Length: 433
Ligand code: AMP
Ligand code: GLY
Image (cartoon, rainbow, N blue to C red; front, side):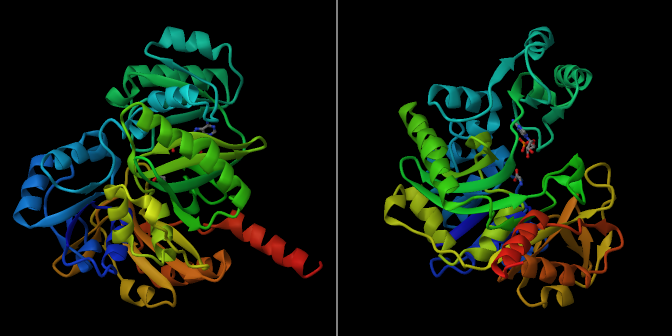
């Protein structure tokens, strides 16, 4: 079967890498792709928002299946348009992608189906929002309702900051995404990224991961799209996984089905493990980035078969296997990210870095020009490694990074610190001291 993958980041490189291992695959294309993806797929210069171009390419190249990576085309209805053209697709409809496209939509769904999440209010004007704010406790979370590339969330520690965040949203700093806001209770706990394939009716949980959203070591500084990730997430015990499935995922899938907008694709939950158990703080309607990079390093089953089973509605007959190894991925970003950064700087040494035992390097924002590899985005490389423990995977990833010659890039040096502290603690108590 010929497959067309939509997207251009590290998530798509990891998906492409896993898809090429499938015996079901004939040719893999990626629109638009990047320099790393070009090593495993044929990249085609079609934008993710060019639905007509994607459909025309799929028809002309006997594409049997389209896999959509990013959220924007899903929220814009690419899956609906492909389905209407008779092309099989992995990814939710526009109506189902509202779980990510509108934070208020998700909060209302949680209320209707008694899914544990923080208390909230939805507002379309600043005065009403501020009146509600005055009845709440600090810290408080202010979110733009729509897609804001991971930037639309403010956690305010004080009233001035909270009121300023409300004003900023309605003054348009997030564009149309901020025309409505959600004010949400701050949830205390440890964050987990949890993934489940859903075919509209059946659910197949995938592995767990944690990412590091802040730009600086020690989880400090501004939020980013994610500076690194690891899997599994040790805080996600079998009991927490069971509760997350029963209390959050199953009611969501049943609720979306009941409303006539079944969710088909991968549901990505941001879950806070609180003292009362798992609480949802956000849904995404797609794979995580950089969580997918570590999931793909641990996946032992055929990804293409799993995604086809999702699209075909037969997940009840399907299962996936994972390596017992841990995996960890470190994001290398261009200096200045997540603020302004320089583009077009040269990266050298990837061959030696990629040869380190257990290491795979996924490209998130690169182009090749005249034989040189250049950075073309904020997050540029995902240096990923497998290991028997998170600590071993971390050591391998940083050994590879130390071989990369890119003075214009940086990375965090502590990805995985929480899991490694847990591993160290467990080893110490096993050793009796
Ligand atoms: P998002 O852009 O929705 O991924 O949110 C960014 C970050 O804000 C998340 O990774 C969480 O760390 C944090 N966050 C979002 N909602 C809440 C909440 N209700 N309580 C605490 N932290 C939150
Ligand atoms: N790593 C978080 C996300 O993909 O939204």
